Image (tube, rainbow, N blue to C red; front, side):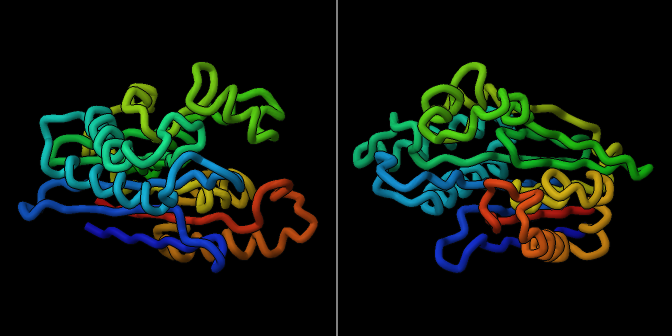
Amino acid sequence: MRIELATVAGSAERPNEDWAATALPASGQGGTLILLDGVTPPQGDDGCVHSVPWFTARLGGSLVELSGSRRDLTLQEILAESIRHTADTHRSSCDLSHARTPQATVVMARWDEREIEYLVLSDSALLFEAPDGTVHPLLDDRLDRLPPGSLADEAVTDAQVRNKEGGFFTAAADPSVAARAVIGRTPLGQVRALAALTDGAARWTEMFRAGDWADCLGVLHKEGPQGLIDRVRALEDADSERTYLRRSKTHDDATAVYAVL
């Protein structure tokens, strides 16, 4: 088995809000992959005394622990319990009802000798490569289905579409959002490799259209996660006219995990 991970902060002036981990059991059968993309809040009060990296580290740590130790729980149940546990650690000091309380997108994959179970919540990406080379993207596309312009105003986004019916969902303080995740199971024999990308790394395909998902997985296979992120940074730097970046930040935190099973 080959597993590689790389993460690069979007700016040296602020901490990386992505979080990722993989775990393999001592038995050598199966494994777990967790990827979180912390949601950067706008300037101002978010009702919490803790940072987004504080939140993603605690949520991610709980997800890894439960994914490995509680095989009797589904990934949805593990996500719900981890959100609840993380919320309990700062419920007494923070306003968890605030729309901008620390939160994150989530990708989870867990496999054994028979199948792969997966979960995707919000706009990070999970890719499965079949033995014949076909690549299947597993995506939560709710953000893409929002009306044009609905994300332009942060206040409107928070009030009308963030963690709201008809909008999109992230892991924050409400365990019930786990039921909104894209989930599924695939026989292990149908997956040769898998990859998880935060949207900062997925820009190579989603923003710059440098190649499709199969091409993206090809870059990961040949150059590894760091190679893909380096390609993204080169495209960002070259887009001086902001043809592709438009109103987006020039560099976003970028994380990629690649596993050959």
